[in-house]
Length: 66
Image (cartoon, rainbow, N blue to C red; front, side):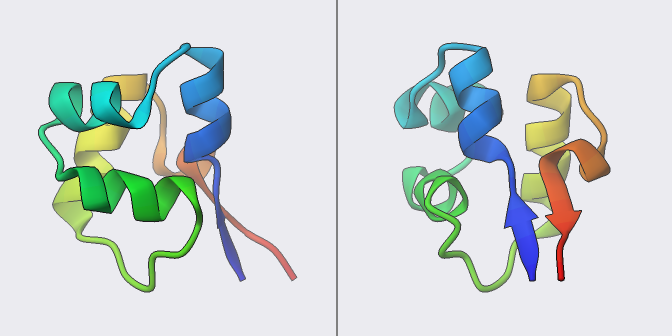
């Protein structure tokens, strides 16, 4: 299972879904699905935009768990 740490990162930066959507240039639906960890697939461009916004690596945003 792949875990998404967007909710934790948003909390650390005191950001809401609307803030991330606006600043990263992503749809609110995309951010919400990642926030709630209900996304089935994610566009590489979306991952890139989130990593740039939070100044992190892909491995900081996603984690493979067993």
